[in-house]
Image (cartoon, rainbow, N blue to C red):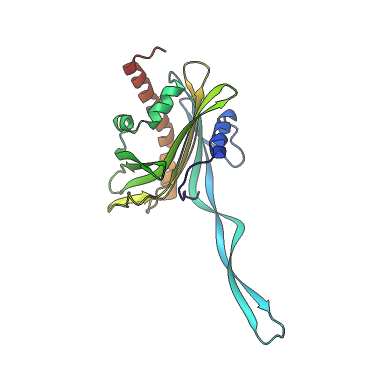
Length: 251
């Protein structure tokens, strides 16, 4: 999964994530169900990269006094598995209204209160984009990881049905340099779509991939993701419910 070079997201990217929510749990080829718990299903697929290979071609010249050799890079139709996984998550979060859930996800100050793994989190504006800096606590003896990513939200109208879509993808900006003792994650992508479940809850789709780098074995990264993704969604749902109670929302 390639990291982003920067720039805003296209309309097609937002609608693609929106339609994933409409195809609820129709995950497509090569995805396997990894865990199902508390109304949340997590699917995974091994991440693959197209390989770039340098090839040498011999070009005969006439009259044949010499032969010209040229080197060129060819994008092969062969894929290489990275050992990491990308994830699709589907679930229903009860007693959590879609508008509130989307607001909670975007509220970085509130997230510092309910996400215990945050070391530092803030946002700034760069070239018209909202850029987020996020540093995540890792257990000793591993270094913390940090992320710099563009994040955008749109509230779409699908046949009169409101769909909240939030996209995030890694980028780099000159204002946020890498730090000593912290590993920068340069490959990160997350998509989230939220709609009403027709009752008092939210139906959710999430796509997630990151490569935390360093010397962490890929099997350990995938094992942690297996548990952390459902926990994150449930923690966010609990934060949503607490916020609704504080604001005096009636369910």
